[in-house]
Image (cartoon, rainbow, N blue to C red; front, side, top):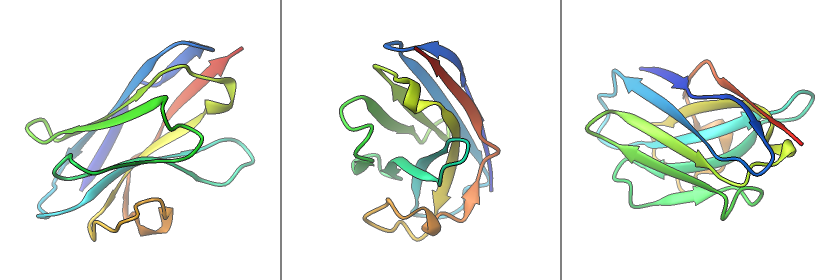
Length: 124
């Protein structure tokens, strides 16, 4: 399985940004796709997850109501729409897959495939 993130960059506080994760080699019948972020000097933080059917989503408390995750199975792509960005959203955002499709999906230890990450920087 290969996960490739794209779409990160520099944004100002209040802006919106969408990052994408293109997956290849997904031969599993069920899985969760998640976004996990890590800021310098901080631990990994669960951001959001979506089931392979797209009908179950979960969000970390710090992004609820601002970030939205979606999946397009035809394109094997997961998206994270980030609205009302804050400087504290600055981090490397990793796409990850959990092939056991665990729920709740917030435990980052459950993800076994990871992308290389994309940097999101939000200035005040």
